[in-house]
Length: 410
Image (spheres, rainbow, N blue to C red):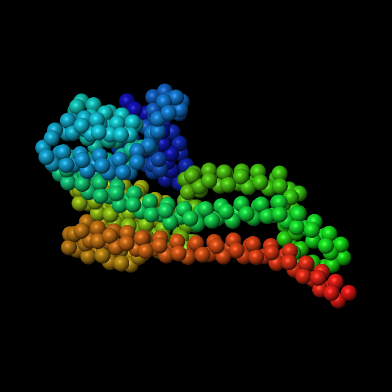
């Protein structure tokens, strides 16, 4: 039986780590839930030394969203055309270009041939197929609408990948500018300013009082030159420890909370999270997944722990008999329009249809917000870089101009 490693939190919020045996990834999640433990990550433990085998084989254990979308769409088409599931999977395996994905599809085909349900077979590869993907496939199998569910899954994976791609594309230029600005600052402070200080000293003979901004820059430069061997390693270690901390459950929760407090990023994070919530929850509901299971799966797919925790808290109220729109209406992060439209969907029995419209609206909002942020951040970074260069130029030209004036008066 496969072994799974997990990180989780108990009822008191304490972080836990461990291993367990289960028939599938979904079964491992169910075991942890029954124990009163809230799973954060659950991964199947590879047989032997997985890290070693990865380096020896030189094989990447990642599957691109594009490959997953193509696989899902083609599998849906073949099933709707009446091709047997096992034969469809074997055909898809032959067509796969990603070596690891080809291996995964082959494993799924063998499991299906052995009588295992497709959803359970997918559950053995949580690094490729998400919990939402697995749950929707299971629902499609039980409802006899697997081909339709796979079409919806392909659309969902495509939409999510599109949002990620746009965010990366929009952040690329500002990231480069930040790197250039920081690198330029260190270069100027450690190399340029010491040479300029010597030139200014030779010109003034140390008798002329320098402007305040020149003295400040020279002081910063002298400090950085004196302690460069301490400052640079400290910065590198600090960044490493920070990145490591925000990967822990506590650190991730703190970081996600900070993102919701930063004015520029708050709007984007909220709109991305709400778009994911609306499309994921609508897809699960339309597939026939129970409300509580749909909420748990959706909470894990939102991408922000603060909002995920709000959704899990709302699930508790739903379990106690309340409509989902009620707790969401009190949320500080879900806009009123979401709870209002959800309420209409609950009254008319068309939650999935209405939430898909909400998802479309917020995905368009995400595009507009990304474009707006890119247009704002880029000129700001250029102004900062220009201001830094201008300040240094003024720090040099000021003393020289003062010296020229003294010589002329003399």
